[in-house]
Amino acid sequence: MRIILAKPRGFCAGVNMAIDALDQVLDLVGAPVYVYHEIVHNKHVVERFISRGAVFVEALREVPDGSTVVFSAHGVSPELRREARERHLRTIDATCPLVSKVHSEAIRFARQGHTIILIGHEGHDEIIGTMGEAPGRIRLVQSAAEVDALEFPEGTSLAYLSQTTLSVDDANTIVRRLRERFPAIVAPPSEDICYATQNRQEAVRNIARDADLVLVVGSQNSSNSLRLREIAADSGVPAYLVDSSDEIADEWLVGKEVVAITAGASAPEEIVAKCVELLRERFGAVVEERTVREEEMRFQLPVELRRMRAQREALEVG
Image 1 (cartoon, rainbow, N blue to C red):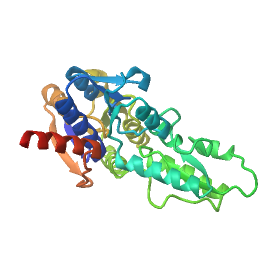
Image 2 (image 1 turned 180 degrees about the horizontal axis):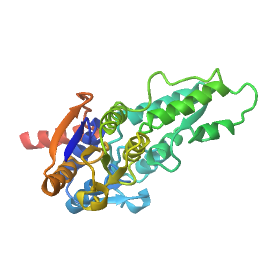
Image 3 (image 1 turned 45 degrees about the horizontal axis):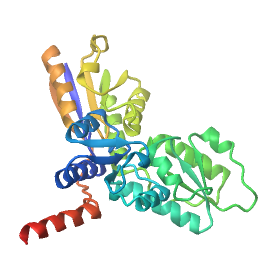
């Protein structure tokens, strides 16, 4: 058996920043540290932080007054930020800067008087946060068919935005239909779908065409991981999303000579390594890493965390 290992794969700059931020907050503050929603959409990452004393909550009312709370990489609404201030919570905002960019665009478009059409998946944490930036001014669409169902009063000024983790092909299909129906619609100043999502999608297309089977490492609630599996399957090969090597079924591998492996942007590299090791042990697989894009992007830690570290360092020096 031969394994083609996609590069880039796994953690992106936003995920690295969010995970590093929560690690450091736990070091500085000690347990418990509360986290609004999963810090990133990966079971293994969440379980590791729970073991360190992180408490993941779905509502701020679950957080005791005055406690420390970390906002996840997917972003939150202004209403949630107001609630946190009123509760005197110490907040660390680990929102991915690329998600924050979409939030800023939503605010700007709303102030300019546009009605915003947001392309994304209903109920996703990122979508909930973005829609909260301009309540009543945003319409969510998930398909070209939903674009066809849109109706607006004559003279309505329109703009569109996208969730950062969408399939590039799916988003482009919806954007084309938006432009056909609403030729004057205003586009965001730059691409909303993040660089890491696009790079991983390009990489999986590249490796899938030479494979008999594709394994995507990631959790079922990870939007970008689900898109990778769909893209691989669209290439005409069997493709499976697995959270660990334990989920790889023997029957998938019967007669397969080339297995391509990639990982969603929130999937840890050690899980990828375990999947590779399983195939090496069972089939004597050899590994070829195929580089499609190099990634050098790095994001700064949240400003609130940098202040906390500076204060701690000043106390230690004093």
